[in-house]
Image 1 (tube, rainbow, N blue to C red):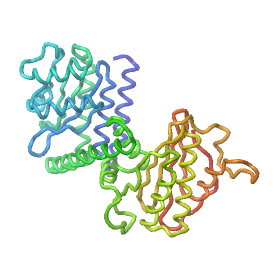
Image 2 (cartoon, one colour):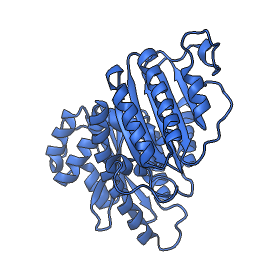
Image 3 (cartoon, rainbow, N blue to C red):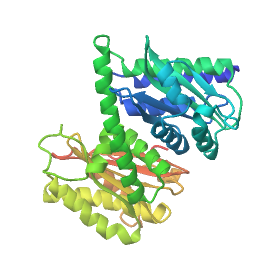
Image 4 (cartoon, rainbow, N blue to C red):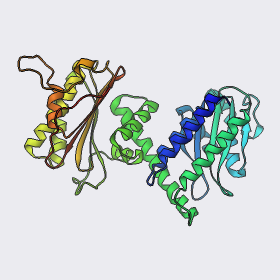
Length: 383
């Protein structure tokens, strides 16, 4: 490996170690690992399979939709290097899927259709037990460099350790519980991808990317957010701030949707404990943000409203050109000025206002506590 590649690998381990906190999200950790593995030299896509309690392989994370579908085929057909790797506990490779091993001819044909011409399967080991498989897919025939395979083995072992961190006693039982939870989360995530895709008009890969971004933006675990997206705002209002997060609204917004958005936001605010005056404030903030998106964000964007940690939250985002530098200080304009009051009103109403803006668009995050909000002084916008 070159020096730059070694530095990249070192950064990968730093990124992975940062996710291994006491209550880390297994699904997000495995997806991060698969994406980093796809950055290894000679690798175009990567995926991770884990064995469940009966010992059946389950697809848990993939760096691309093509890799995910290929891994699902491999599991369903019960053939391929990854399946053999899990059974044998040793690395299995097919460096030329154009002349595949006769044991997995159907898999090889499907892999070529997906644009892959070589595959390497590396066991994820914990001592003598194989807990899963790391799959590396290449667009060209040929084996990977020894240094790359060594790095991949280290990353696979990191994944195995990550699944069992802080678990020194009875790790077999804990692994089964963690994997089962991850399996259930995977189902919720697939369902949530469909909901996001339908509501925001995205394809499935883009919907998954947006779901992960929502999780990072909201501070929620990916699996918890997926459950909230799938469940919607059903059942009685929450009894305490510790109850599960709820996704109340998820929709595209344009000039024709503003009135409907205002009404739906108001219903959600009333339903979840805000008084009439507080509801007016929260609806005003969301409406002003949506109007700005329509006027200055390319004609429209998307709105996500959710309940978590005792507050109503909203993210209004667009793909416009960003907020100009001279507009990034949030101040109330002079009485005679035209426009420019939206951000200042929002800043006065909401206890939390966080703005990310740049050439790829603007994302405005609003937080409004269910109890009396503490109104902050006007602030500034981050680029």
